[in-house]
Amino acid sequence: MMESLHHALHFDSLVWHWPIAVYLFVLGISSGAMCLALVIKWKLSAQESAAKNPLIIAAAILVPSMVILGLLILIVDLTKPLDFWKVIFYQFANPKSVMGRGVTLFLLYQIATFAWIAIVFREELMALINRFMPWLLKTPGVLWLWNTIDKIEKPLEISIAILAVLLGVYTGFLLSALTAYPLLNQPVLPLLFLASGLSSGIAATIILAAILFSAKADTFGMALSHRLEQPIAWAELALLMILIIGMNFGGEMDKLAIEAAFWGGFWANLFWIAVVGIGLFLPLLMNQLASVKLKHCNTFILSSAILTLIGVFSLRMFILYAGQMTPA
Amino acid sequence: MEHSRRKFLAGLAATTMFATVGVAGTTVIQTITVDGKRYAMIHDETLCIGCEACVDACRETNNVPEGVSRLEIIRSEPRGEFPDADYKFFRKSCQHCEDAPCVNVCPTGASFIDTETGIVDVDPDRCVGCMYCIAACPYKVRYIDPVTKSADKCDFCRKTNLAKGQLPACVQVCPTQALIFGDLNDPNSDIVQTLQQKTVYRYKKHLGTKPKMFRVPDLKGEIEL
Ligand code: SF4
Ligand code: SF4
Ligand code: SF4
Image 1: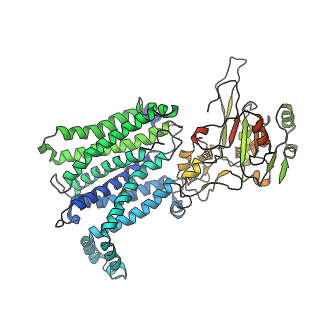
Image 2 (image 1 turned 180 degrees about the vertical axis):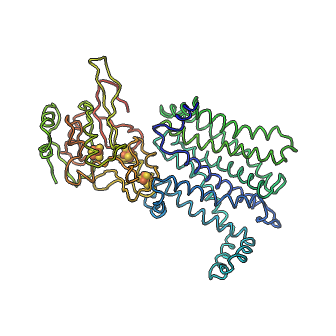
Image 3 (image 1 turned 135 degrees about the vertical axis):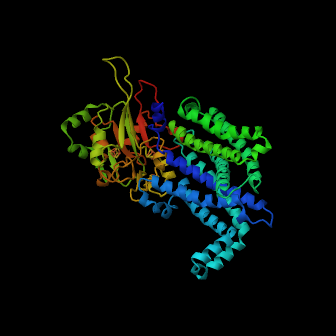
């Protein structure tokens, strides 16, 4: 067992290790949480304050912190972490680089999402600033800037929605740009990662909202989250099937890659048990079988979300490792 | 600048001289033009004897640290029965792709194609060590230099021998002249002449990388692409 695990985690053609899977995972959470927060906010009635909604609060915490965490992981994983500024400084040196465009995207996304948080939580932030650093509001330009972004709320939100979707597909493009590995070099990968990023973003938001901000089943947005979860899970299943079937129609290396990844071996087991079984089927099944009363119980909500997160992280690990097993 | 192969050979050991003239059918004089455009290499697998003199010469000339290598000679399973068994040899090194995946993915522009020579190279100062290029290279010839912590690989001796107007170290040292180096844009170069005379293949050409490493197949077996 240990032997096969060792082989599964160390092989010759493996270049990118598990930190990259964590990186892709947290970016997906950020992208998904952002999309969910926007959808909930857009559905809120005018009287309700977005800043009071536990799900939106949870998402507002997850969105920037997950991107920062992802960037930290990326930096620590460099062979020269102290040179990380070169990635920002020289980001346009190669316009074609997916990673370079990712860096551009992070910067825009981070700025835009901070601006959004400043709008949504304006009152709360004002109160905090007044208490701890009142000089900030007196600094010329700060209030003016704040008022200006207030005025562009709608266009800002639409841009953020686009950026969040781009962030979701970016996690897939980062891998699908690698011609060197047939399983990674697949056009459905960005869509698959977008979908699973949405799932994980929703799940993580629910967990955080339930634990820290006492969200309940009847909290506004909770029912909406659940309504979104199922079609996304089905879409993920469909995309996975398209990947497997499509690659079976492909060339010799495609077929070999599929065989090595999905049939037999550590990663195949992880895929069928953790990704498909635990992450997709179990939550779908639980939702079909559970009574309305059970569905309103917090334990039920939490366990379903945790299963989804396990599944999505396993998918990231699976694609990253199994993908690198078979070089072109 | 024109340099004749003879000049390079002058300093080499007598045994090498002997081997060089001893091989029938190969061009003895190779010329290189340093200001040329598209440098390429041929590995003649019918001539390679797997001595790995190239590997050592490269390490010495380019100061390649232990534990990594810019080139490897991969020996096949034995063909035939002892004592008549022989091997095929495959050179694993940078192919200097004209559409280079390593260059395409690099986020900082540290991986680049030198426009004067067509050589694919790395700027170690610019490289941050994200390893994207190492993952992207379909030939798996890149590594992180344990000393500089930057991505590195064969640069056709661009910064060493070539800069001095000499042939790459591995080409110079090969006792059977299995390696031919030159400019594809020069119709009179040995490499172009040889390409016109011999059947060659390029590894993983179907990936669209346009590799500039040509191989003369050892035809006793199937060519693996
Ligand atoms: S062989 Fe690899 S390292 Fe060399 S140019 Fe091609 S992709 Fe780049
Ligand atoms: S490891 Fe260096 S050369 Fe390779 S892609 Fe990253 S920055 Fe570019
Ligand atoms: S051309 Fe130079 S760098 Fe490349 S393998 Fe030969 S000796 Fe090494």
